[in-house]
Length: 638
Ligand code: ATP
Ligand code: MG
Image (cartoon, rainbow, N blue to C red; front, top):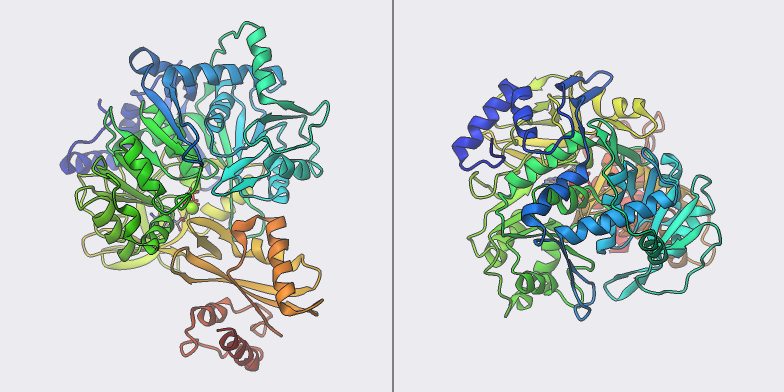
């Protein structure tokens, strides 16, 4: 069977088939991959514990599927094209053959440093090819990677390292991002003061920023590679993994304070990311595919590394930002490498749109055939700009809805064969059974309806647990609605049956496509010595999608409000990272609470949105004058 659907009719047929006979459907797709031993059972599941097993009994290594099996035919094809932050620095290309060799060498480095199957390895690297190499080297030997986005603070890294008890950290001296140098190793040093499990830190040279190297703990990447070379650079055979062995942990924010370690396993994740990559983008053998995400997020895991490589694609990775040195950078890259498929985020589109069309002048975008969007709902204005200015009205846009927990895309048009409507993720992919639920736990049937989005049947790429706390996984995703996976998103289904995601229905914000839990930010603000209490809400932001609005009660200002505001921002940067910094901080004397003492966020949200004439029911407020004072304060800030 061929993985790729060729027409809308084929999609409809596959969809029907996948619902009526899911095991046969996924079994056939899994045949397109290389297994050391075939599975005995395609699917075993219940959503009550939950307990989800795909391809049980199957043995494989995902790196053999991403690398070894391509060597004969595609050995000299670029697997990774790397564009540096500085456009004047040389770019790098790694063919499949070269990438395999580097992965094997680094896998041997990990082994030399006592990493064995099942150990957790934290990877905190900038967007350089060595990040892909480190990820795949872990998978090669069956170590579980936990990639932490380069923008997170020492405290956030420490929390993640401790949660998974990582044994080794891979980092670099620093990272280049726009005009700045990020001092990654120094941040890791701070993190490790709070971690006992880490025995070794491997440090890649990138910026040659001065760093401390601690004897017995820290070693240089390059020295370790040399050691393997003096050992004769032996091959590193791929560890035989069970289909359900964990492949990686990736932390994501939830509605409570502590990030969750989402666990993905090997077989199902491989099949799902490969199948969805091949189909959603309808990747053709000579196409250059460019996903602008960072590998620190799920999109980078699934659609820079595993999905494209398992399909033998050429995946372009970019170290820098879309606006450096100027807002034409992405278009320079498209032009330079003749990119055919561009997968990016609404926040990037809106920001580039705001810089103006002059940055498009003189850039040849004629290579673009397909466009993708991910991370948050795409507004119509951005959709049309993307379609007109970038796709020249010839490239289909696929708006892909999915989550860290999903492993891969769940709802999206299949490029070029499905209908599209701006702002709609459209139809579920084969194997995905969405449903809308009402507040009473009943499924909402029919079309032209809205509800909470759930999925009622497992798909191979879904999370299996949250690291070290299975009960949390059950509680968060499988307890709201009986026998359903709850996404936390609201959704509208149109008269035609098309899905439109309307945003989170829980206390999670989506800032520039990044998930941020309100409780996490509140906890960080409350750590500031002068803060008594705080409440965080989202408000519409022209570029970020959602901005963060903080209402903060302080005991006193050490100097003045402005310096307290800066200190609070610094506290958040320290505790979480700059991505969680509020856009607006309003100091208030009190927060609106119900008689039972719960903060009424709904009212705070309205005030943040400027909708003060439409506060809704305020009858349960303990003290209505609090709201008046906050409104007055908000107006004074304008
Ligand atoms: P990344 O981790 O790379 O940011 P991601 O945004 O797909 O990828 P999450 O950070 O886990 O994944 O965020 C998932 C949430 O983002 C969803 O619950 C939803 O609210 C929102 N989201 C993601 N993609 C879309 C989309 N295409 N349309 C609407 N909302 C989206
Ligand atoms: Mg996101």
